[in-house]
Amino acid sequence: MTNTTESMDRLAFLKELGLKGAALVAFYCGAGTLESCSKSDNITPAAALSSPITLDLTTAAYSKLTTVGNYAYTGNILVAHIKNGSYIAISKVCTHEGTTVQYVSSSDSIYCPNHGATFTTAGTVTSGPARQSLTQYKTTLGSDGKTLQISN
Ligand code: FES
Image 1: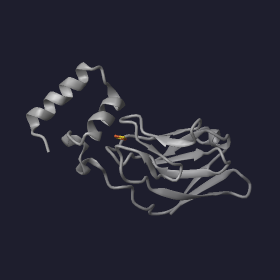
Image 2: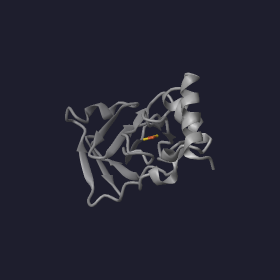
Image 3: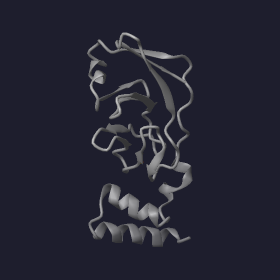
Image 4: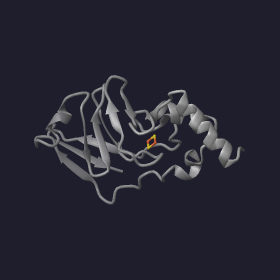
């Protein structure tokens, strides 16, 4: 473990090298020297829903979900129509520091724009600094294709 002065000197040195954003965090957190990258920064994954949520896919807010590759938010949940044609619903709150995550259709994955964590469409971490999975919920498409229910 390094002392604070040495840690600050390393951060300044890395900035001098031109490392920015996710690259800087990945490099610095990978070295295990920045206090803000400690386990205490990881937030608790979202809790279970108190009751099911039903989205009306005919409304302007959610109609884009009928197209593969699109996503939307409802409350703290990201809902996406993923590449295999199914729907997913996962917590939109990154388990690192709480930034809203996004669905990336080109890689069929979940991405956090803050520090670059990535997750599978099931919410499992594939790249840090996040360490805990995003909470996943069940999705059920209505028989008429016009509603999507989200539940535990
Ligand atoms: S908030 Fe840091 S990776 Fe998401």
